[in-house]
Length: 424
Image (cartoon, rainbow, N blue to C red):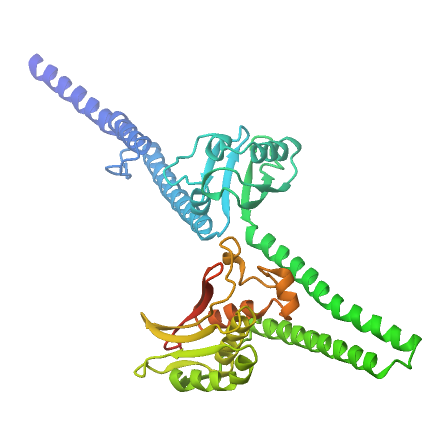
């Protein structure tokens, strides 16, 4: 009887201990396992802990915490993806640095501009780009907590020789804990070149206009002071004024033509042109001028040359300008050759002379506006300095190029390469 009572007591104790274990000890093991899984960023085996109200509440709270963590991580990934998309789409170089000017983030254009395709964030900006002026600009922006901007000539890397407008904007203006700067690199090289071209253009036009206008004014003052000039002197004055008025008219026409070609609204009036007939007709129009200077002409165009799709009036302007140059710089009894030949998917049209030629240093610049290889001789011959620039722009408008070959004393060949068909 005693043994039965003892065994019953043991059973009751065991059952009680088992109940306590299941209700109060095992759930906390589950809570511990659940918490560790969250810390280790592993998917928890379960969230529902139903042994007692307290552990169940903790399990539900941890489930809400994990859901919230996932939501925040998803938002962070979306935000990071958006930032990277914006960074990647920017055409300017952009880099984010900390208060010690160590790079924390950089976009693709910054890597390309400074040859840093393999570089990783964490290095000082100065070591990456090797330019002390940029580093000083960023340091000053962080120190005074105000944006700083400066145009800086790059002296190293792939951007050597280019001018960058560098803007440094400090971070953490409203927070002491966050410091650093966003640095933007905007390439203004082309803009500066365009500004220089514009200044040179205005200066050159002013100079070209001043000469004939000064002559007009001088002779008008002469006529006003003494209207009764001898017939021979009066005729000479009128001839000089007529010559310079022609020069002035030609200059204005060339400036207007160039302006029209550079306009965004410039369009081509396309038609199919048989080059053999077209070029032969142009040479026929130039016979008298060639005879005046005792020049011979030669046409070299294959009869089976395909028709060219181009703007006929503008193509004629190209040939006229090239022939005009060839006649001006040819010696008497020379030969001017007009050629056309297939070249790839296009056609090369060229005018060659046997004239004075162009020096090697001048050759790359002859398509610039108002550039003259021999300034004194060009003005003496009456050129405006815009003819070859017009040729280049018309060729580019057709999707082609203009090229030049020359050897001093042996002549010059100027050519344009145009596609046979224009892209619609």
